[in-house]
Image 1 (cartoon, rainbow, N blue to C red):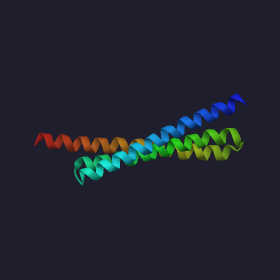
Image 2: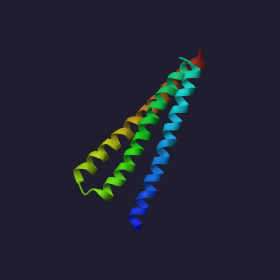
Image 3: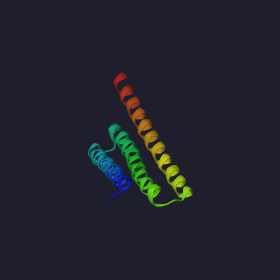
Image 4: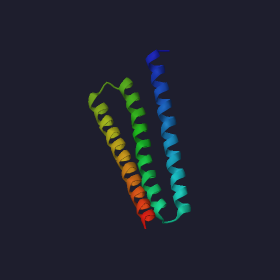
Length: 113
């Protein structure tokens, strides 16, 4: 077996494990949100879990990019996949940061009163 193909398989497996862990974390956060109801922590967890789903999608696109890079010799396809992956990572991290900041600010305002 070719070492490059083996390395690709290992990278893709790690990416998919990471993606499924992210999806599981998002599902756990959504289920915790249901237990909180509509309160302050529920809205924060909801925003953060949406960001986690975007990042998990980006990780899946990263695995797809690794596979396509070694099997298809089309630069346009690789570039499009790279752009989609980066957009998913940016949206995911932005959503997590903004959701965390809003939740932290709201909790800080509650403790000041």
